[in-house]
Image 1 (cartoon, rainbow over the protein chains, first blue to last red):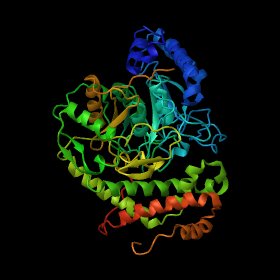
Image 2: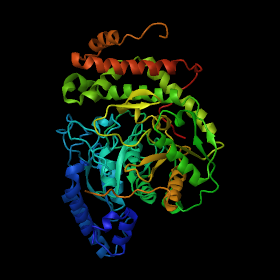
Image 3: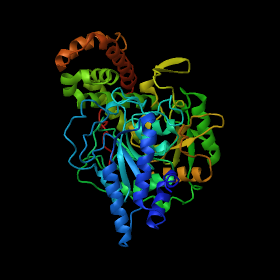
Image 4: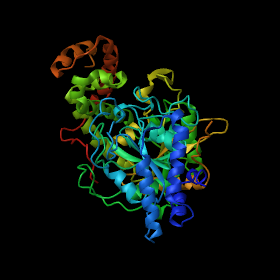
Length: 467
Length: 62
């Protein structure tokens, strides 16, 4: 069977497992066989939790045999960026430095919640070192490759998360997004993803990057799978000091609700320049499909991006300062040198950045009085070749590693929820993503829009052909 | 800052000992580049006037 079944969505796998049309155990075996086949050439996984997956799957099958109700993700294989704690494994966060750290004593909250919905953990995923990356390259573990063209970047820093989902090695993966690290790889690898509102999902049991900007979220090949994963992961958690005290309602039951009454607009200005034509054409395609022809501008987006950049540099450097002193040579030099520079920045810059952040959020919230959904490119280009160091936009050469997140960074800076949707163009091997953005706490809106676009055939996330 | 060119080398020389960081000569050009990018970002940001009572906003509860 399951060669075919594991190519289906998590929702379909779960339906098959719940109805006894398939077993969780055979699905887990099929997923592990798929990983054994594809991972050596794609570099998505750094740990495969085969024993745990098979035990978990057997337990699910035993519960079904007893007549117990199974969870919404029953038997669906999932995997997590290796900055999530997995009991018994060192949480390496893409680094050499942490790979010999003591193993995690327990799972990250979101891992436990995915398993609480009966998803089956199959492993930990490659990532850019300490999440300071948009490429998916890793000097210690090798790059996670783009399954649609392995000579090209997966995007990062949740690179392995995108590679695994786009190649069919897992139905759902989890990543982290500080400035775009879920949305950039989803865009480059042609996936749906959800970066929820800042403070929506628990960060407990994950290795941070820039704490005041860090988010976690899912990547998948359908909007419904994002909704199911989101629904499984929401809820209060006393172990996370940042988690907001805002009620979260499940989204999957509301996914089919019409989007016709939603007021939508494209983002102009900053979000309509400094990119390749493909990025803006993708936004136009989505806008046309949704009947959107008006444009609004987020004034001061460039300053917002600058502020996010500085906050990231300083918070990242602060997190790593002691390690930079003692183990500087064990870092990827490209990461280390950015962190070292961040350690040297004046406090006044980052204090101004945080004050600007609050002010700008207020300005953007005013726009949401008149609009429910904003559309913007997810990345300024399709996946560049692995190893490429610079990009040219508007005649200006820019550092690639920092600028793939040009369009994602201002949005996460003020914590807005975003679903990115994958757009394909005939004749192109590689996709590009569009951000669907809503007001804080309206994950339901971005997922409904992503779902209707998928249902209407405007966007899709096919598994890459494996050569 | 607008009037004085940003001297990244001087920043490295002043800050590295203060922070207890050893900087390899091979890393200096990259660190310098990152500092210069940050300085451009900061210049843009600091041009923006904020009221004295503007509050920082790292956490959004509603």
